[in-house]
Amino acid sequence: MKLYEESLAYIFNHTQSLTQEILDKHYLTPYRIKSLDETFKIAVESIVDAYGGYKNSIDYENELKNPLIKTVMCDYHLSEFIKQYNMDDAKLYKDFLDAGLFKESEARHSRWKQFSQSNCQMASFIGNNEAFSTIEEMFDYFEKFSSVEQRIILGKQIESRIPMWGFAMACNWLKDIGVRNFCKPDRHLRIILSGINNTDLSPDETFRKADLIANTENVNIFKLDRILYLIGSGDFYSHSDLGSDTVELLKQIKLEYRQNMANPDYDQAFIDYIFSQG
Image (cartoon, rainbow, N blue to C red; front, side):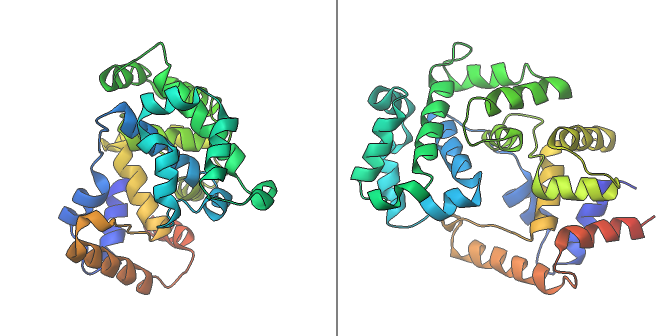
């Protein structure tokens, strides 16, 4: 049994409008970031995504707050951000406060201090790194960590730099900016691989197992990660810049998938399916 092939069959069986072309175009093709500024922006978004509490207290996607955050963050221009704050997370925190993004009375229960610390730490890691000074040098440096154990070491090194990131989120950032051979070893990937292997895999073990499956089946680990995420979450996500017709199509695919799922626990439903295949 090849897990990736079974995953494709499963997802097509539970949607009517999804095609291989749509899957490849919107979900299974890695995107390689073009600038250090863009890697910084992706990192900020990953910091927000790290915990639900960040989303709830920071409300990053709020149409009123998002432009204010962008302005305080120097429009994600890395060199300008470093020049403005130079690791001074207290100053960044005060600027968020002064911009009206939260009230001082709310500060005790918010994540703005951790958010400020993480942003400054990440900016320093990307912008003040002796190992690279351009996007090309960054990819060259990261991809020297080629074996599975070296990639795990790199993920843990980055994890240690960001206050509110774990290993899985560090790997997710590397994957999202386009570093080859990374996955996010958490949530759906971890649950599904643990389930079909009858064991509780740690994030490290999940990474190793996903890498082994990808190599054995000769498939990009990014694709394996993405297809299992879609199966486990049912989140056929879209972006407004895709155009209204595409957005509506992806919404329809998401609706079809959810309507065709008898078991609301999508991860377990797929695990049961895999066991039924023998």
